[in-house]
Length: 470
Image (spheres, rainbow, N blue to C red):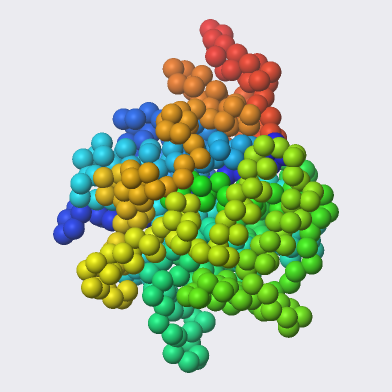
C-alpha cells in the first residue's frame, strides 16, 4: 500500500514461574529486554530520557527499525514504519520471536511464558495492541475521519476479534439488571472500551485516541492511533485488520465515505462482541437497525468501486474481505483456519465436550490464555499451525529476516543504517522515530516516513565518522 504508513505496538503479558518469588512478571520482562539489547545485540538502548515515564535504559531502537521497551512493567514491541502490508505482518511476527527467544536464553521458557493477548482473567486488567496509521493533515479529522470510521471499528471485530472466555463487568453494568452469563465473546478489548473518542490513554480507553502526535512532519501528517483492536495470533487477521483500515483511510483522503452513524458506539461494540447468535444487530442514530455484516459490506462495496485494480495488496484486501464477510453470513465456524476467535472457540468447545466441562471452569480460562502463548511448544495457536490448520500470509524466511532487517522503502531503513554505522564508533547519540542526533551537533531529520534518505544518510554518516582534529 504505497500511500500509507502503518505500524503496530504490542504489549506482551507475562506469567512467572509458579511459586517463585524471585521472578515477578516485571523482573522477567526487564531481564528479557536487557537480553535483547545486551547479549543478543539486536539494537541500541536509549541513553537519554524519553519523556517522564521512560528513563535511560528503559528500551531502545532495534536494527530492524522497530522499538522494544518497558511500559508499566510490560515488555512492548513497536514495529518499524511499514508501507507494505506483508512487511508489517513479518515485522509483527518478528517481535514475537525476539521476545520468546530472549525468554528461552534466560532459561525460563519451561517455567515462565509471554502471551500475545489483551486480558488478565484473574485481575481484570487489560493491555493493548495499538494500531497507527499516517493520515494526510488536510483530511478533516473530527468532522470527517472520526464519524466515518467509528462504525467500521465497532463492527470490525467480527473478523478481527481474538476471542475471550467470559466477560469483564465494568462500570456500565452497575445499576443495570444482572448481566446475562457470557460464555464466550468475539473481542478481548470490547468490554474495556468506555468512550468513543478521547485524548489520554491512561484515563479513558477510547475507540480512537485523538492525541496529535504524528512523529513526522506536523504540517503534512497526523497519526491515527487506535486502542480498540485485539492482539492477533493469526497473521491473516493482522493483514486483514490493518489492510481494511488502510483501505478506508484511502477512501476518506479521496473524500469518499458512507453516511453511517450509530446510536451508541460504546454499547454497540460490547453488544456485538457478546452476541452468541452472531446476528450482530446494531441500532443506527436514526432509529433503524442493521447488522455488522451489512455495515461492513457497505464499506467494502465503496472500496471495491473506487480502489479495485489500484495495487495488488489492495486487491488482496478486497478479495479476502469479501470472502470473510460472505462466510460469516453463512457459517462463521467455517473460518477456523483464518480467524482467531473462531479457531479459539472451536478448540475450547472441543475440549469442553471431551472433558465434560462448563465454560465457567477455570481450566477453560487457562486454555483461553494458552492460545496466545508465544512458546511454540505450548501455545494452542501454534499447535493448530503445526497441523496445517492456519492460513499463513508470510513465510518463515521473511519473518526471520524481519528480526534484523527493516523495511527497505521507509525511513526505518535510514534509522537502521545509522545505528549499524554507530556500532563500532564510540559516540553519544539520541535516536528518535523522526530524528537522530550524534555528538550533539550532528543531526539527521527523518520527518518524512516515506523517504529512505539515502543521500542525506551518506553525508551524515561521513560527518560523524570523520576523525576529530587534534
